[in-house]
Length: 514
Image 1: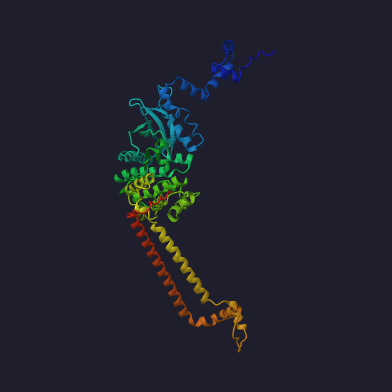
Image 2: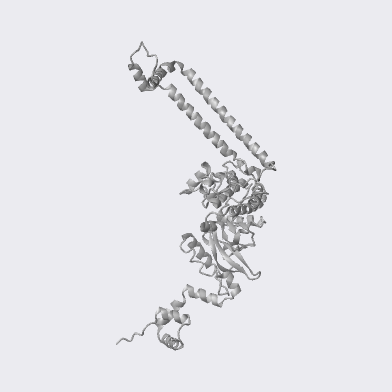
């Protein structure tokens, strides 16, 4: 006969923890636990499960305080556990936390209660913190431990704090504090209870046109404030744009790559800084950049908002950079046909390869967005900006260049056809017997044969004359192209005049979006 005591099942342990056992069963269960070390260990293991800790935290916490913590309290490591880069950074930061007196918190860091982990990037970890003295939540950006020993990384981290603190604007994240704790530099910023624009795109894809305009307007305002301080952001992308709920306010963040426009390091060639998919051509080439580089990046962000995909994509970073410098992105109307033509024109100008062909200031683009937003809301009363009503010059030039190339190629083919004899025709001509009595009328096949035989016999003596004629034809074609361009310019002028002075007897035109 075995003396082994029966062990409790998982269902019994769960029922006991949930207080679901009858009083008589609970008494026997407790008596059994007193005499059974094996079941005691099982109960300890069962009650240590993450779900039990979360439910206990919810039960013991104050309702008002806990409502703000619900999304942060569930294990901050589980969300990023499978990412090797994040896995290496987050535990290192959490190890630097000091014990907290509040059981709901992960610990303390720099005098702040740490609620949870918001996310992690290339430079460090962002924590959600609570500041008891001011009763507010904050975002704490901590430099990753493996970068804390790097002088260059520390300098960039410090530069981010200084650059951000110098720009005071509602659409630019503010800095509460710059300090260091446990050997790790950190920045303290307002906690934005929303999500990044990149996360919104990942979840929802392309955004409504009005939302695109509102986001573009606010990003332009934030960039204009930064540019007014002489700063170039250099990393404008959806991941660095935070969204408050319902797109009420957009906040531009992560000025880690920001530099003064006259910084010597901005003029060094061969130095790349930024995210490849949203770089400008001059950035991709490692050349000097100014505020117009941020505008090209803004164009890429707007393209992504309209289509749900970046304008320049490839398998490698190098291939992306080549596309940015050498290629034009796929037309937006092919990816999203309902996109208004005027918005496409605005994005196309932001995407001009030459900075001189882009808008020159973020303030200028912000004013256009304001007018476009007013037009969307009141299309009959608020007209579009005139600059967005005419066709982009660079695409017209591309059309004319393509037309000229085709015509020139046609002329070259014609020249080759007339100047190079056909061997078959030559052989047939040499074998053709002389006919002294030609018929008075020839059928079609005979006419064709006679013509092809006669050409090689005449042209060799008139090559110079034939080439002169061909050159004259090409010059005439160039003149035709010039006249076409003049007609296009005249049409633009007439269109602008009609827009500025519409006839009162005509019904208002529908908006381009309709």
